[in-house]
Each structure stands twice: as structure tokens, then as C-alpha cells.
Image (cartoon, rainbow, N blue to C red; front, side, top):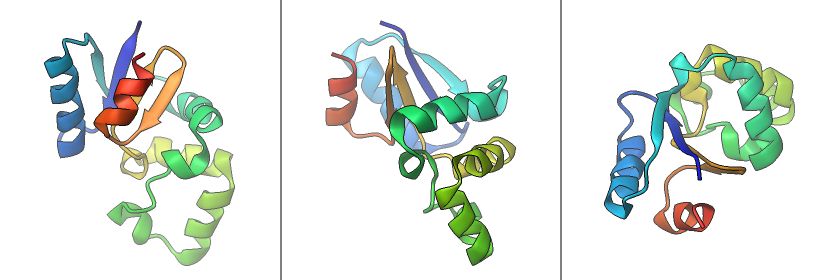
Length: 117
């Protein structure tokens, strides 16, 4: 099984997730969103698999600073949201775990464990 964890370099929740994987003895690759080639296209794939509301980080300070009209548009328009997230990866929920075909956002040991089975 191929396991990849995507996130931001200084995100504590990404660290919790990777620490958990290491404790489980699960090999993984860690990639920071800014280093992902074709991030917008990958975001569209992740949105298709996990849903826009699961990928878009509406709790992020960056999101909250957007005008209400832009927030509403990003919540409804997957293409616009993917473009915005590619330009500012802080708009992506993290960590993002990809385990074969599973896409899991955020870190919860039980959901990660289920994705790795």
C-alpha cells in the first residue's frame, strides 16, 4: 500500500499524523502542498473523492479573511476552490492522507486506521 501525507511544513496536526504512522510502523511519504506539481489538478481529484466541504478549510484564518461573497463562492464552486487552494495551500484542510484510493482529511487515528486497512 502506498501512503502519502500532504500538509504544510509547520502544521502541528500533520506532525501528529506522521508521528502516529511512525508508531504504527507504517511507511509513508510526506509532501508539503507548496511542493506538489500540478496541485490544482490533484485538488480536483481529492475534491471528487472526498468532497469539497472536506477539502476546503473554512476554519482557516485565510478563509475567514475573505469577503463573504468569495467564501460562499468557494464553498459551492469546486473549480474556483481548487484554484484558490492551489494559490494558497493554507485553504486546504490538513493533513491530507492518501492511502491507495482512500483520501482522508484531518487527523483522527480511527479514520486513518480504517483507511490503511
